[in-house]
Image 1 (cartoon, rainbow, N blue to C red):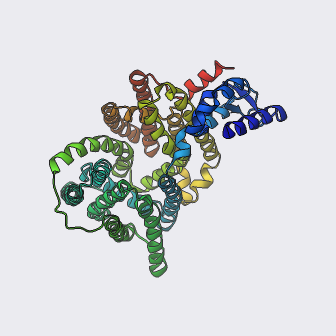
Image 2 (tube, one colour):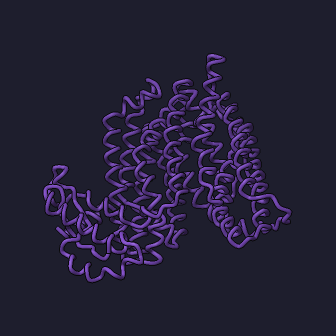
Image 3 (tube, rainbow, N blue to C red):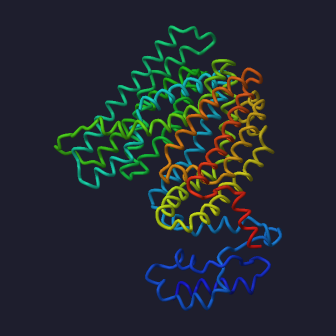
Length: 514
């Protein structure tokens, strides 16, 4: 009674004392009880709830406060999303991981700025081209085992199956080393035998050598995440690695007066080695040493892991096609400018990145339990995906040239590329949490199918766009693919789940209450 009384008093007070600031619409008294009150207080408040139905209204609009009309304001539904249980029930680990990733995003962006200034467009582009190939080969050489770790490790720990846990870790590390080393060797042979023209061959070869280390690094990250040690999982990747890379390269510049792509790649290898050692030490700390004999079931593990590789592999192809084709067909100078513009455009998606921490568990919970509330929750989340993304994108549009000039004077030619990407990213944000609605509702195969065909489409469009317009053509091609993918996913989500996740659906539904 005390909790509801406080809420009712507050809403009555603000409604009568501050009418210019608050207008209350869409009664959701039952929602108040389920989201604000503790379970043991809900049963005693039914009478009070009925008597105060006209006073308690939870969709509070700050429309007059911001100078807008009392209708057609999108602010209230955004704050409705704050009432979903996941916002209040996020674990400490999830909050820690989010904070680390936010800090890491800033550190990584800063690292790319200083690398671009120290190596200029050509050297920076060479580094990006080589490390992108490292990431690409590592992704497929990992065989999907890092994602499989998120399934098997919690299961084995819960069931106290230490033999299976040790066997999974040892077998996965061996398979990843074999897979990444095999792909690196194959890529080296191809690069040496096939005429590569102006490709940065030496940088590519060093990048290939780093593939096994990057594969292990990714696996250990997911292992620690599966063990619920979020700080150990995310800090090496998002904080320690960019700091160590920047510090080492800075000392190299101070000592020698210059920095080359080769030296940065070599130092990156040292950093990867240190991070893998740190991660494995963390895993050993969590899993106390024992004499349990490892049990190995590689066939079963790969049966689960390889389908997971399919979707993540298609996603990576979609992300890397443009960089690879620009490097092969245009040159590494354009790769550097293109990548700087892409990195900057991705700042606009920060709010989506933040809301993802809530969207995934909330969508899954409601779909499997309270499906009647799923549409309203998705519509509320759609506001958080779209409006902050749009606001940041508008700011980046105004400040595009000075921001890109942080990388160097030559990078300001990437403004059109930045604008093309921001258009696609804002459009994607307008579709809301639709990818989760597909992946977390048993329709992963549809997701893989869409990503696979969009990857093929992206290759074709990039070849055409780069031939006609160079790096800007690649940006147009990739942006077009992202828009097609968003529309396709939305169509499948509506057809398969009956949920319309876009901001346009949310705004249309709200207009019915006005």
